[in-house]
Image (tube, rainbow, N blue to C red):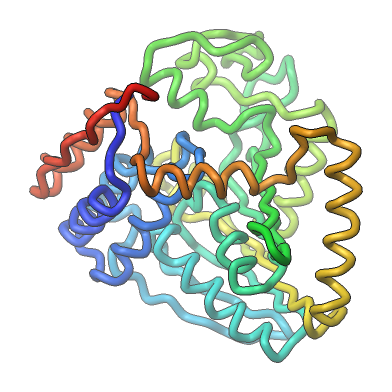
Length: 349
């Protein structure tokens, strides 16, 4: 892999999004999220998604300049995202929820018709960096099923939460209900390599190591019925409360990065609920107990990503040739050529 400067990569991707019709500020926000996702080590949900997002923006499946509206109803903030790019809309929603949480202990939000949010932990992190606790979940079209199923039964419906940590990086936990994120299968298909048994089944319900057969079949849930239960919880909160419909119902093309999904967000203000000092003290206490029990290498979720982000801000983010080729295709498609040169390799690389 070769490494690319994060600032240059973000600036180029923003220009490509503008060429797709997005407003400059929204384009910059979306590009920053995707590049930062890579910087924090989530390679499957960052700039590797740029090509499919550009394709959807150009086809009209995603709306380049959505009419994003807010509606207060029965104590819940509803955001109507207008099928906008998720990485551009979600930061605005987090800002709105954080601002409201300055005067309310809890702010529940339903996001309607938003583009695929990818690494949803990025938005929980944004709230935590503003001093808030956040829980976020997104529904997806059916891509997951139990062994023996002959069709995808439910989304792998990701969920994430984050909390500020006094004196340290925020705690950030981000998972899909499948054993692994579907992005790992997409990456394997792109790189023409097999996947491990236990990740997915084919269209006949049989275990498979072929990523293309897996994409035609279904992802397997983590921990069997427990993963299905988590997916159902998210489906209730993010799907049924928002009214999001599967791609096959809306007429949108099924597959990667669905364009009209629902999301649930809950932002909590520790200062108003428990008192900031009391919350920070309690967090510090149980995190220290966790560290002591975990041994010298123990860490909480979010620490490694924060260290990696700081390192990659200096050394660049590594991109495989397959992703670089897709970025070149983005450049050809949008008329904004991908001309970024990889950073010089060091002996450590």
